[in-house]
Image 1 (cartoon, rainbow, N blue to C red):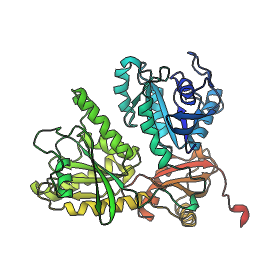
Image 2 (spheres, rainbow, N blue to C red; image 1 turned 90 degrees about the vertical axis):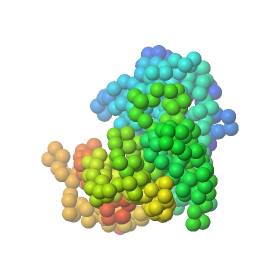
Image 3 (cartoon, helix red, strand yellow; image 1 turned 135 degrees about the vertical axis):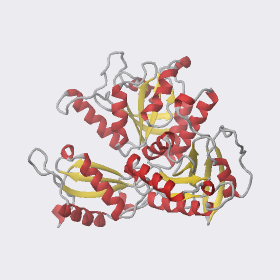
Image 4 (tube, rainbow, N blue to C red; image 1 turned 60 degrees about the horizontal axis):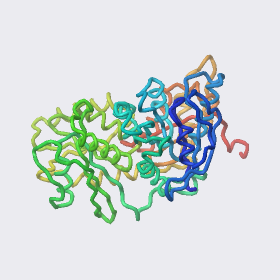
Length: 452
């Protein structure tokens, strides 16, 4: 078994049923009464030839840490930290509840990758709930029926990459296995319809590889092209344009949006194309947030730049909008060009390679703790309930994106504003613009304090 899968979700969405389906045995008790599962349970999961450890967890409920439900949630949190990927299960027939939305926001703050699974979709049931699931911001929901075994092929496709590409980092200092130059860099080009995505791909390849035209929505599928740039293999995916859900009127277009979300999930660097006449509209920001939430490196590509007269004004508007709407990824690299004429396109791929390098960057523990000591001296955490919150140690848990864990005396008392301050400091002091940076806090002490 090469990786671990945690099944999480609110009570009574079918977690134990899915667990039993994956392990091929009735190991977990299943009942319509919510909250049957209280302790996490492990088993050997299998889909076709894919083998993995699967963890069944208690239902996520909002409760204080001292309550039974709160302690059950803590068990779920520990299972999440042990997992390589989590399946967030929702009940498509019941639709999205406030608890689903609350815990979708909660899980996005964890370093564990998430696959959104919409259960109880047998026989086409739960279609409205399936569409509403996009609002959780966790990518394309996978429709399944744990009870009837439907959708297991799609679940296999979603989990298979973790058996190959994701490995638990129990010894981070032993080196990253993620950045393998022999494997192609996964690059996705996304954006609203008719911003010139396929024209850009043709310009990069020097070939009319993609069908283009003035009609919006010509590209329906995600088209993958493999090629080499400066000795680096690149798998480039041109995706269908993404509209707001209210504007999706055809089933095939809805499927195209799903393919685009899938391309974002499996990409490493995502180029978001903007129209120079209307930069960063609401839908552009929605797509950008999807990329950031998936933890991918992001580059903005402003097309039709040759048609813009007041370039300074447009650049200023773009920067202001980024500052207010995407403060969590400061310094996003932006390339201005004309896909039709090719002017400025040559700057895009060097920016892609640089973003990929930052996304894979690892910082030594000694450098991080020197930095933390300096930050604490200049700006210590505020008092919480009259007591100082002590930050004792920091280390990098993983790359892709850069993810850090800070050990503190009281993680729950550290203000969110101070966590943002630390993230901004990491970005600025270690030169990591434009990639998501994740910082998690844990209760604990400096593991090397007794060795000094």
